Length: 293
Figure 1 (cartoon, rainbow, N blue to C red):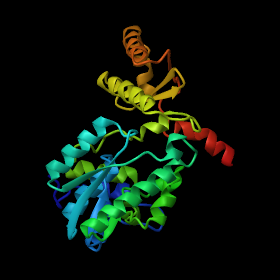
Figure 2: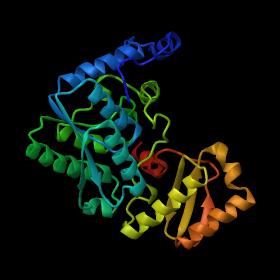
Figure 3: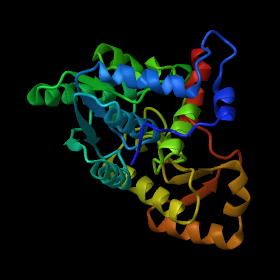
């Protein structure tokens, strides 16, 4: 279980000092985070099971906050294995966990460019109703200091719904959160980044539950084959596989390629291709970002 006695070496501290105005060490940032959390009152963490929200939940318990609950949304575009892992971690931590099953917004079904805004807005709205029923004060999420540099339309909903982002407020970056998570002994400190399954489908393409299950089963199979960072992008009946660039040669080994191709075709894909450039975060966002310049 996490403890306050996080082991951070002098080298770690020197590595995390910034050349700009923020000269705090990693330990100092963590202590600032705990102070922020202690001032929130009864707090609900919007918990996805990812690295950031897992770390935030553990830190909130460690602070401690006055009273703590984890809220997790259940929608068709969230992989089942992620929900199972989230449940297991919260149970191990000994925190109250509420999984809220929510309808799919029509804007998300239509996969509009700012679908994340509609998803976050409705999710936080439902979570707010849950907080009111429980008599809680504050809703927090795992937005970190790096997220402001990426295409994140959902952050507008975070501001509108008055959701606090303690990791961002404490100035913690993704790499620093991973380092702290490792020091706390959290099991997923090196877990690959993940996003909802809708991100595997091109914008403005209608999304069905069948599409989502097809993608989920394909990616889960790939992970079982040893590809930790993987995306199966769906272009109609074509699967475009992205893995870490250094894993592309292994993916192209005849036996591995044949096994994966056969399984993905069993799932309903007619064609199976490999993106030779490897995994790229926000792969489907590139055209959007290019057109916005």
